[in-house]
Image (cartoon, rainbow, N blue to C red):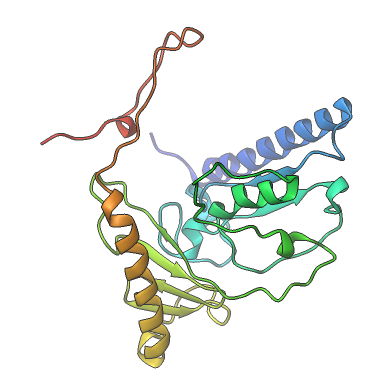
Length: 237
């Protein structure tokens, strides 16, 4: 079915309006229940834009599924009045979804399961409006596999505060080049080597787990009908 440009734009903004409306309803319900001040409210998304790339993508390159920032950089808002997080504070420190669980445990005084190791770290000091902590630089990895057997450097990005290494070959100074238009790998061989080495270590740690599978438990009495999609199956040769 042919979709006109005007319909596509309308659908994009309509989705934003729908999200705004429902976030507003959720916030109103928390207030109505009297738990707004002591509820940690987080708004974020799971990937960069898809169909909206041609309409607005903040000058970033790529879209959903891409190894470039436009495919995986997302907003993250947190509000918790009783925790001192009720004032506007813009944070440019690079963080990752893997930081959410350890951060929430830290904020609430919870403890991680015995013997469990988080991939992320608590970013409490970054979030605290009263603390301008000297935050150490770190490297993080994102990739998009969508295959049964992971492939090294497949749609991968190694990220640090000021740099992005894409697919092991393209290096971008993200502060100076947020649109990732100029590959400067040849100008910064030491930085390139450092980020490749980090990825190699990360991959070597994960590789032994690739053959492991995740079990799906179905048939609960409260959910007698379960729909499985193609993503739930493992191909057999």
